[in-house]
Image (cartoon, rainbow, N blue to C red):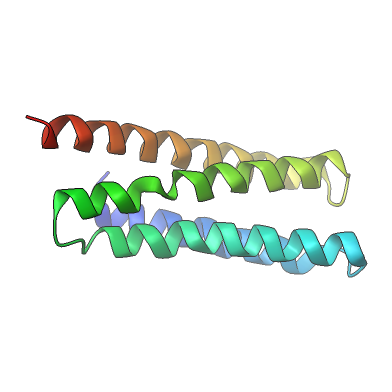
Length: 118
């Protein structure tokens, strides 16, 4: 997967999470979780896009700390599932994608760190 494909993949993940967040109940819990899942999922897309135009390898590595945002997305998606705020089948693919993106960013960061320490 090249960087343009990953940019699109992270944007699509963010769009899907935004739609999910907007569909949550409008009670106190739903509003809180909606804000959290929208914030962290859109940060994944935004920060990766910024990382792709980094001026140096070190800057790119720093930006790849977005793994925190991808991992946080997993937490909130699983929390939505635990609280039964939407049907579990609506979350399965999003949770799988969040885990896949997290793995991609961890692997990319490890590779960049190894290459920059040579």
